[in-house]
Amino acid sequence: MRRIRIFFPLVLLLFSGCATFNSIFAPHTQLEDFRERIDHILSDSLFVPCQTGIKIVSLATGEVLYERDSHLLFHPASNMKLLTTATGLMTLGTGYEFKTQLFADTSIQDSIEHGNLYFKGYGDPDFNTQELAELISSVKKAGIKEIEGDLIGDISYFDNKRWGTGWMWDDEPYGFAAYNSPLTINHNCVQVTVHAGYNAGDPPTVIIDPPTAYVSLENTATMNDTGANTLEVSRKYAERLNTITVKGTMPVGAPDDIEEITVLNPEIYFLTLAKEELRRQGIELDGAITVDSLPSNATLLAAHAQPMDSMIVFLNKVSDNLSAENLLKIIGAEEYGIPGTTQHGISTVKRILTGFGIDSTKFLMVDGSGVSHYDLLTPEIYIKLLTGMYHQKSIFDIYYASLPIAGVDGTLSDRMNRTAAQNNVHAKTGSISGVSTLSGYVHTADNEPLAFSIMMQNFIGSDSLYHAAQDSIAATMANFHR
Image 1 (cartoon, rainbow, N blue to C red):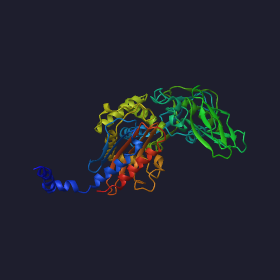
Image 2 (tube, one colour):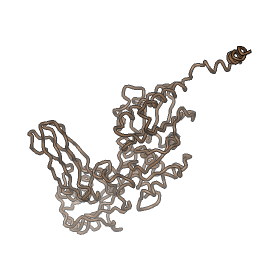
Image 3 (tube, one colour):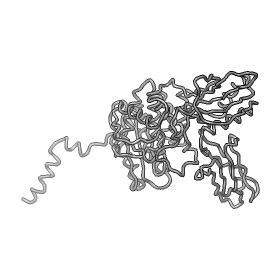
Image 4 (cartoon, rainbow, N blue to C red):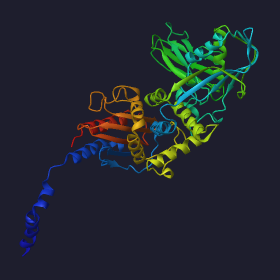
């Protein structure tokens, strides 16, 4: 009897039917292999102490191809820009233009402007010194050789909050944390180039571009012949000064060190550069530089406009934080009225996302760029956003074209090379301390469009290994076929 009891279950197992037999010995499906490959990538001990959330869906069928902790909240880093730019396109439209205008408040007599000259800003994040010179050339063309009054900036289009909520105080001097302003120029930074000298003990040469009296320079750095590089380029941000500091040592013959350093009060920086450009073009300013409102009787002399598509492409391709912060306030101004505020911009983002089936109470957004560690979103939210934008046919092409392309351009130019993901993945990167994210679109080997979101956080040290894992997952998606 005992033998029968042991043998009988085996008989049942082997002969209870073909369905049971086939379920045990059936080969893996392509989708099961796909999921196992991603699981294998994430099984590395690298991921034991950190948190990873992923969701991958087919845009053709809506099928979820892979999912891991996609409902958990993560810091998005620059993936936040996907929300900001989507909302900009949805609310402002593809034909929107970012303006910077130049006015005079009195008539011109005997080549003299007897009143004031005004610049009114609307938050164009990419306005630069070349475009400023073109605007001021219109003053010269109007026959003005002297301005008796003041040079005034109207910055009423934004509120007076110039920095993001929850941004790190010691990030202030670096270009990725520039102050926002309706009057923005050169991304509200100066470019500092440190050029190595030829003799140990000599100071390196420091070049500030644009050359301007708005900033001062303290260069205590020296050259060395030991190969040690302790060069540090910063600004006296704790002292609230526009003093550029260059200190430490630099090896003889070292390549140039180029840094973008922010300036305080960017609208005054703008006006200072305008005053210096007036002088270069032979126009004297008798009055002072100040900030005030544009009078109703002012006459428009010239204007510069930048189209939406070029701004969005630059914002996402290079992941420009200032562009995202300015855009969010522009959205707020256009939707709720002047002055544009970050909070009004965020309210608009939430309204747009609600239209994509996203519960606006289930995430936290405090800025437009993702610099803040307060921001919290889920991979699932990103999938709903990416899917929603995919079906917005009138604006999707611009949105899609603005994203970095793997192995081609932007922040993905040196990633996924020589894989099926190269020139295929269009995605937004994100990186702040302990956080790395990647969300966007990819086509499979069957040309099936997918949307994906990969969010990783709570790790220490370089994000290069996490980039490598994301790139492997992206290549796995690109190689997938049914």
